[in-house]
Image (cartoon, rainbow, N blue to C red; front, side):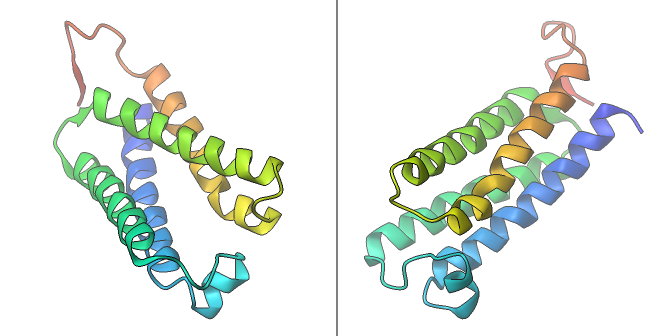
Length: 134
């Protein structure tokens, strides 16, 4: 299997990961969310915006995975977003604002960012000749 095929699988898996996160953040009072030490009571605006952006990114990963050609800039943007999400949560963890369980929950974003970058590194590098992955 080549890196393009791996990337497509990583994108599908990342879309599913995001949808799982949507469930956890949308229903933060649920028993499953509590297992990750998410706060049960969250202002509706914060909850709605968090869920919205997780849905948007998850939908973008699914769209990219299903497209005949995977657009490299979209995958780079997604990798940066996942890396940034993990960095924010790691920073909160470093200041004891969240627990290790919560950090563990978001560690999947770090893994997916690394996988996206790995797949992109092995893909065609001449953006002028091939601006998107086939």
